[in-house]
Length: 377
Image 1 (cartoon, rainbow, N blue to C red):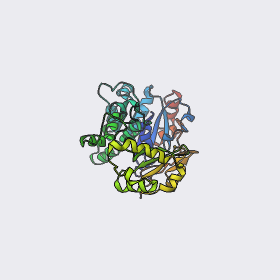
Image 2: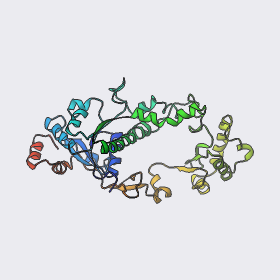
Image 3: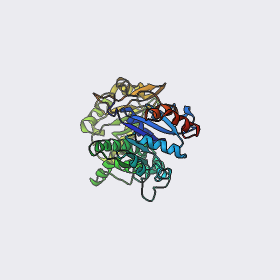
Image 4: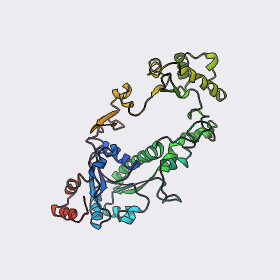
């Protein structure tokens, strides 16, 4: 049983960071119940990795009886995850004030892009927009070229889903001592800004040029911290920052001390990078792996996410698992005494409606009535 065994989380259906947060909480042992729309096709969720380990109750939240059903569920829950724009839950009649009145210990975790207040609060947005106004997107890309979106990892996942989980866990700890619930405002723009903490430090130290991409230590400017193409068209990554690691890179790659001795002179980085491009194109990715893998060079092959599970380092740690025929990341972090686990794959929309509501005290005749008038699916 995971460390959150015994906790119940209601997750209003959404996309991106909120489902990711619910997935992590489910991996950790919480009973996560996804509130889906009544009438949604059950098979639509079966290949969505974020639904793993969750149950699904289908409710019509435009129907008064559907709203009342949810509020009765709130009475039996510890957390509710709200992925809606600010004010939507209030308009539906399931906002934080109403939920806290029904259950004073409920944690109402709100996940948005721009936050619950501010000039952008009601505007639509996506990861690329949230990371744009935090400086994160501006910093990524090659010199003289436009910024490169880093998938939706910084705003949605790191600055969103992870931030949400962090807030929920802290709030659960506080509620255990105070007996009171509270509202969490988790905004992706705030999380993305937090992820940029180190670059604010480096800029303050005079160690970062914030106006030019590919000119700094960690943005591909340094020849010893970048990716390189190999003879077979595949790529490898090098991160030989520390002097002892850089010395090993020179040894393994056959680099002369005369040419590569001045490691930390930014003026020489472009010519040394061009030279390294020639060096790494002289062998295949596999050949460089034979020379450098699992050494202190700080080296790894660049793999696509389909091939990543097959790599020995990942396979030996069971970093990936297969659930219902879908390869996916295993739960993390790892606990020694209360290990996280994926108990099952995702339930189809509404598959657990009757079982969950029965367990929460709904009588059989109530379920029949709710089903007949379309309040539940």
